[in-house]
Image (cartoon, rainbow, N blue to C red; front, side, top):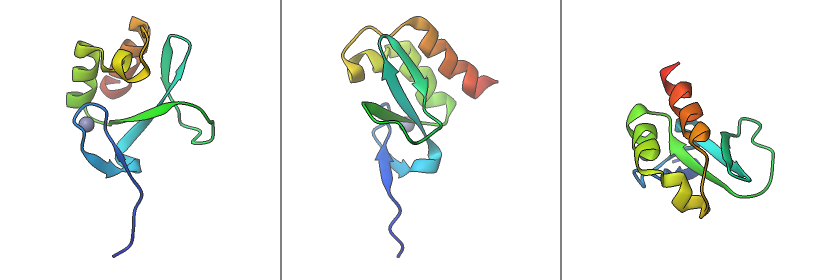
Amino acid sequence: MKHIPQRMCIVCRQSKDKSELYKLKNEQNTVYIDETNFSAGRSCYICKNNLCIEKCAKTHTLDKVFRKKINEQSYQNLLEKING
Ligand SMILES: [Zn+2]
């Protein structure tokens, strides 16, 4: 069996293939989706599905993960990403 690197979703805590997750980066009080897969620094992963992203926005999971107040716009951007 081929080994595929897996990452854990911050909401459901399931390990998944990287292609099924968004990589999130934190900068000051903003969190954005890192699509370059290049930058260093703190990052986390979240499932590319409504369930996890809506739960993340509702419970402000990112605040806990990055241990700071993440602005509301960051959550809105995530929601727009899956709904748009
Ligand atoms: Zn998840």
